[in-house]
Image (cartoon, rainbow, N blue to C red; front, top):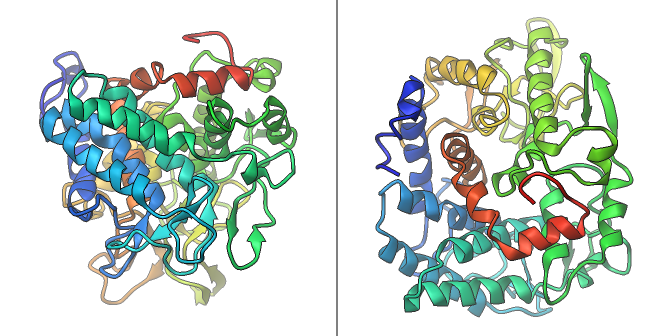
Length: 439
């Protein structure tokens, strides 16, 4: 693969390939510049006092192959950076103490940028730990050379993944809990019904040390909701990111579990349908928000103007801060997230590319440091804003990864091809009942 500012000659037939490569480059700079060089921890967002996010660290690890293949950092130095990050994480204290970094192999959602200890009395998060493990396994699979540094990466990544006790995280039930706190135990919510938790179960089922039983995946899928929306049949989940995050690592084209075989579909096709549903919701714009339309959509978990109510043009509006927005059933307050549109490139490029072009004309920072601002709201007027309306002041580490990885999967399939060789992921898919296609 050539450097970041050019694309494969075959891809140059598309006038967007160069623009996408540049957007990818500016976006991945987040992981190079918002990382503590002493330990590899990645800041949750660009707010200067923000702690590290364990999910953002996983995203950063997953982007390492892109950084190498695009010629940003040479492989030997990337291996050293990766090894240092994994070594620090493996050495972080695991225990029931409230100031540890994690417990039973899982990590707290937020960690202190310097010490790696728990921040903000946050929860031990199963899903954010899963993003870390997926990133670590990406690195372990990609760095397959016989050098000492690459061999150590494989050893460290597998040790990090294999010590997670997935059965403990079920707390005696058939499904995985959202997490745990040392102050009051397990969080009373479980991963059930279609969402980003799909990745969580695949990793848990593939564990060679503390695997989930196959019936846990059955329990996860039991509450799936198959719906017909705007004439499209799909497995429903409102926020668009839930249709993307597992797909960053797994090429679901042509492989099916029991549920998808029953509906003659697959999760890739399902994400395509979900992307079109989001666009159609914006076109219909039932709540009359400013800007929504064919080339302005993307509703997901994202930053917002803030909690409260405001009368706008004679309409009482409820406004949200960071929340999982969704379509078509909400919540919705007029906030749109460009990053989540870019992350749907592999599923529906014919509607994503024109939408990205529209966003590029809206002064949202596409060509600037870290790429598109993560969210904006044209209905919510802000006097001192250069645009006249609210734009998020920060970039978030967990939003950058989907842009980088899904652009790469769209252009070259790099991450998908790497993870086809990842034994735990393949094992997890098979134990979940997936078959067909490349499996």
